[in-house]
Amino acid sequence: DVKVTQSSRYLVKRTGEKVFLECVQDMDHENMFWYRQDPGLGLRLIYFSYDVKMKEKGDIPEGYSVSREKKERFSLILESASTNQTSMYLCASSQGGLDSPLHFGNGTRLTVT
Amino acid sequence: EDQVTQSPEALRLQEGESSSLNCSYTVSGLRGLFWYRQDPGKGPEFLFTLYSAGEEKEKERLKATLTKKESFLHITAPKPEDSATYLCALSRGSQGNLIFGKGTKLSVKP
Image 1 (spheres, rainbow over the protein chains, first blue to last red):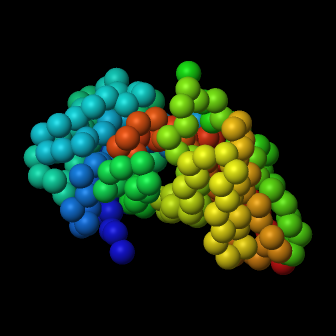
Image 2 (image 1 turned 90 degrees about the vertical axis):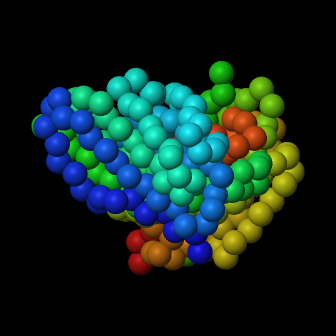
């Protein structure tokens, strides 16, 4: 089975801190994604990557950046955390192609105080 | 603009009481419609992909169907372990870039 592992289950950070969320997948997938999930808003795409060192903006990239130095690892960076970035962050990977499902990690619950 | 709307927001069923969840969508060209299940505290888990109107897929007590404007997730004789949030999503490109609906939270009481 594909495993997508997010490094932290819960994180608490202060406003203005630089925050790194890490995600690793073990199935040699080409594509990796970062979503955030909020009550009443559902899942929204932040950034995605089709290849190493490659990134594309999703629907809500403001205040975030990403890094993909190795195929299996995709990092989400909050340059200066703000309270409106308190959310559940979900990482996903896929093999690519129309019929390839997304495989999600179990999420990181980030609280910014 | 591509859009996905799910209804109802929440559904409470008795064990064995069959029902359907709705996902209506607007898209310029359908590339794939996906159903996921999400349990509390976990990431979404893939269930089905549908590509064209008239297509149907089944898995245990679940059957997904697709028309040109809607998809339905039919749940036959549900059990308490079917309780979860069910998410519908549209593919926006060739690389698995999905737009999600807000989900239907299903509760099945014994």
